[in-house]
Image (tube, rainbow, N blue to C red; front, top):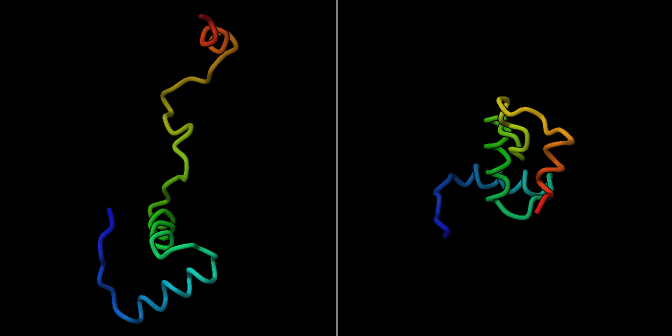
Length: 66
């Protein structure tokens, strides 16, 4: 689903400049990167649950049993 967002001409120029400088493919990608940078959100959620313990060799072996 796409939507429109109204921005000033100056903001559009700045977004396009960032798009060009950083090699992004779209303005959507520029905005997402800015949001991620601002919120310090990890690109991946892998390892994001500190309550989980590390897998052991036994855990891995059990996951391969049929």
